[in-house]
Amino acid sequence: MALQKINPEQISGNPFEAIGKQWFLLTAGSAESGWNCMTCSWGALGVLWNKPSVTCYVRHSRHTFGFMEQQDMFTLSFLGSDCRKALSFCGSHSGRDCDKAAEAGLHPVETDGGITFDEAELVLVCKKRYAADMNIADLPADAAAAFYADNDTHRLYIGEIVACYQKAE
Image (tube, rainbow, N blue to C red; front, side):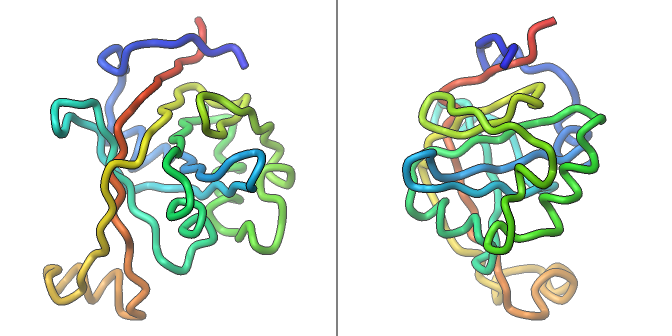
């Protein structure tokens, strides 16, 4: 993995593009106890409680949910445009049924208590600081109807960014 450690304040680029259009892999678990990754297109980067932080969302039905609940560490891995098929595969297949990383052609790597991938261009290693379920009754009616008609809600996770790596130029 040709990544160099940087300060989270050195992250460049447009987070709306990186999260909402390019997507990222959320990975939770460990090499010892097992892990899973999932493609995400919802999330946020910022500062909370005076710490660089991420917010991500995982539905209760997702295989990754159990790993997020069991572990304190997780990673967000941003891949290059050449990995779009891998991101699509990881977003449309369950780790319950296959080895997503292997089938998508990704190469997992351990780092700072989390799992990322050799193909990553930016990696945020995060420590879970807070989790809360979204309550459908509290959501705007249009969001509840569009995203939660089946009652499969998300749990919101806030993680402190404890390490940040960027592909070396």
